[in-house]
Figure 1 (tube, helix red, strand yellow):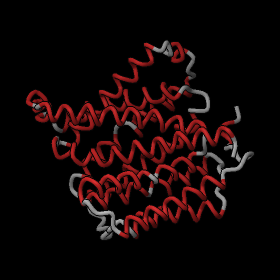
Figure 2 (tube, rainbow, N blue to C red):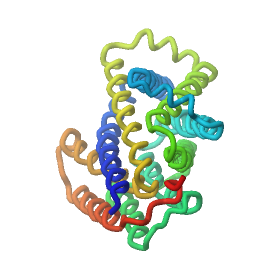
Figure 3 (cartoon, rainbow, N blue to C red):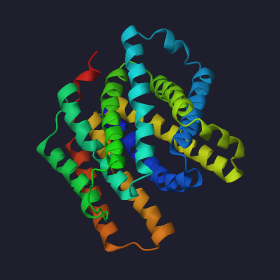
Length: 304
């Protein structure tokens, strides 16, 4: 495996761990703050403020002056396609469907990114890697207690959000070849937060007044989930910078291991056979992905 791929996969594993904790904790956060659009707007806005502050403190702001017109357009698309609309669609849809359905639909991200990466990034998927992708999706579907899709409005909203995030991944992969990950993160979360805030003003204005009545528990959930989101996005874009998009997206699916383990320890208090089989299947698939990333298979977007 090349050094770049190795670094990217390490970041992807860190992202998966963060995602596993985040998925688990967000289940409690959305219960404490039942307005999905308000919750995600507050959370994303805090992340935007934090990343911009770090860019200023780290003296990276001068990098913005060197962005080309093409980069600015790409960053704007990332902010709109990845940082705003899908969050609105995902959390609104998730509020009306079972959590397992939302999780399974979101896991199809690995399929859409893999297909788009072949078409637009000229990445190559070996037969072994294709089987690993199918295996990862099957592990979550077969052993996750999935009752099946009803193609309800909520499920379609979550699917639309997943497709938006798939497109964003491809755009981000291209722009990260020449733009610092923190600048990309700032564009995604900054512009995305502005769009979400405008949506909140135009569609759910009464929700704004509820912020004044938030208690300490609710604010704690906002800050905790915002911190996790900041760590997630920062690690994710670094993973994308160094390794193929399809590879890091596949590795991200391993977040299920973390979420299932936390649920078994704190919720069900039972590590059943299904969870064990699912975990083993995911680990085998991740091992196959790790073994099939050989030197010399860097995607074309690394070439400047």
